[in-house]
Image (tube, rainbow, N blue to C red; front, side, top):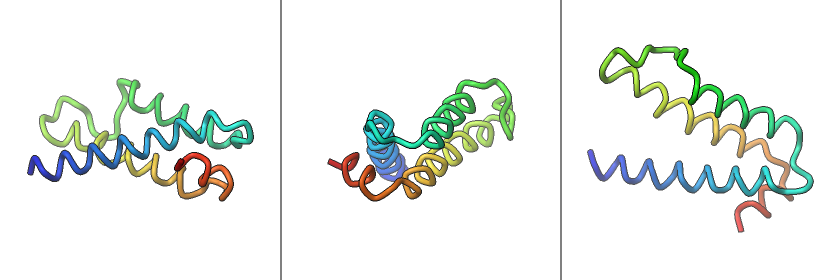
Length: 87
């Protein structure tokens, strides 16, 4: 279980870093900035799909939806920005 969590953390950290570099690229599209703001608002918002009061499931929606949303944004990057953000 811990091995899977560390692997998930490594993937999310790498994707978040790539997203950060893509946002700082001069040719970053507006939809990327809006999508990133929406992800941050979802994480910080007290309103969730599954309330955090439910012990296990409350945190799982954040642990699953946020990495999926980040990965979805990264897959839609233009090739030039994606290559530059991977470096």
